[in-house]
Length: 165
Length: 152
Image (cartoon, rainbow over all chains, first blue to last red; front, side, top):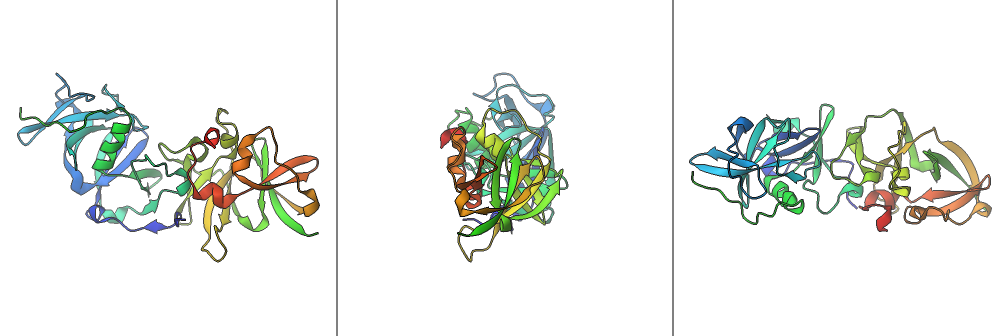
């Protein structure tokens, strides 16, 4: 049985800090090291979007697919209201963008991690830890876990497509 | 024949009990923090003494399509999966303060048949004023993931 109730240590990837990504009421923390850039959604190229995506974002002579998720972290093919920010994340499968209500950087010492209680630890969850930020709860994930989860909600892209514009 | 003491708890109409020593603390109107993608019967945590505790909604487990309830009291419970293990903690949401009762072995009875969800979260049952009161199996409830009562 896991201890469940007690704070745990940061993983190696989280020691440099986290990026807080908010999707309406849902907050995710991903390691800062996985954030390539934070752009504005108004810069999204929406013509001929990638399969299952909402558009492309340009970064360093490449453009990368961008996706949008609901507060339940289900992927949708429309740009939802209140998604003014696009965060470009680097997963093991490649780089992709995700539209957020808000994105900001936090130092590791601002974040105290707790294991997900076993009673709510579904096998498919894209996070394994929780953190309380002031009065809000955040779920600690990673770019690869988030991408893997999006694939379980209908994202069928096997390999992320980036393009030279 | 031996007597034991238990706390009877009301979960918005569903009544169950925990052992006397399992109830540790009562918090009125706690702030519930929603965990996305968590099962409906265990969809929140509360912050308590620098830890995060899972919140079990017994009513939602028993009646999966029940409407949203508004329990107002958090009962912090402690349990051990095995003797001598460090205790763990969880939360049950109640609609009323619990009642302390003394029960005897002679009050043992079968689990209520009209709500099959009790079978997977209760370890025993006793008769109290003519009604069956299941005794919750806290280690089982809090130490394993369950999709929902329809899945058991």
